[in-house]
Image (cartoon, helix red, strand yellow):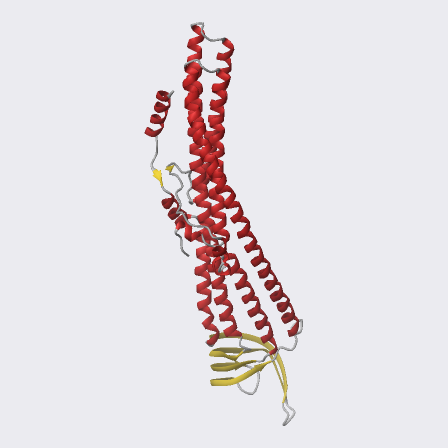
Amino acid sequence: MLKALATSLAVFTTAQAAQLTLSQALKEALAQNPAYQAAQNDVVLAEKSRDSAIGGYLPVITASGGYGKSWQNTHQQRASDGSVRDVNNALTTTATAGVNADWTLFQGFSTPLTQKRLRLQADQARAYEAKSREDLVRGAVLAYAELARQTRLYHALDTVAVISEERARILEQSLKAGAASRSDWLSARVDLNGDQASLKRQAADLQAARVELGRVLGRSQPVSEEVDEVALPAIAMDLEKLLLGLPEHRPELQVAENSVAIAHVSAQQRATNWLPKLDALAGYNYTETKSDAGIYLKNRTLGPSVGLQLNFNLFSGEFPWSSYQRAKVALTSAGLRQKDLQSSAEAEVRRNFAEFEATDSALTLESEGLGFAHENLSLTFTRWKAGSISYLDARRAQEQYLDAVVRSENTAYDALRARLDLLRSAGRMELLVGTPR
């Protein structure tokens, strides 16, 4: 059996593809994942929008020009002598040109409030980018671990199939020699077919894991490289330390805090509707009018103009305080959502910590059990070849080994996921995988 198993592993090792380390996978995911790239672009867009707010302090300058003709029938009567003049299809030609500036001197502090809102929105975009980064790191580590798990399960099923094939071969030879019953040989063939079918299904699961990891890494094709064991830094998990400073570390709480600040600024902006708007106007304009009707055939004006304009918003479909009241309600709702999220985040950290401790303890037991099952499998197969135990006992040891492998792999994956979920809920993913924001 050992010779056949060594041959199987040698063939697999020869066909092994290049290795993809977890560090390489994380770098590739952070560089190529479309969802994370979109979050990064949102940060750039928010920064550019914030820079544009300075325009609120600058004047609006426009240049205009126009030329037009009109034909009109006119009836004119002089006041001095009562004479009447009728002109049909009188042509009037008008030409205009000018440069004008409108500078808002005061608009209820709306410009600094707009700057503050855009700054908060940029902070919000960075918080969303941090959330996207932590979600991506968690997803990439789990997808990488899943591929490693499915690979090991495939090796375990392959080992079981090799053992079943060797047992069936030995029983077939014994059957021909009259030293074994046909019933034992048939049972061995049934087990062999079942093990080979399980291996086929496991190959499909392995390919699905390759596809998923390729998607997380931003690839258009499944991952073709082989993966290593997931080796993460050993970090002591202290519940109180994880809870300390949770609002500063958890991106979702930063998003909630920024939402409250944005709602507060929005209420202040609504309050500015009660305040007047003062504009300074200046311009230099040219106008020339030619008309076949009237006392003057040509009229031309050219020169500068300056002035001040004051506006009060009295009514624009609703009174100014109506929108302010709605903004205050939105601010209250944002504050309540922040409190709820803070409470939920703390509860999530405590829940994930309990799950982490449970899965970590279970992994220790399952790993120990796997060692026992592996040793028992080797001893049982040797004893079966020597004829000291029955076929059913040998098969039972084989099934126990496979069951121990599956439980151990699933528990290891659950422990890793619990560890990642704990650090993700505390906003401390950088402690585990070295990815500071």
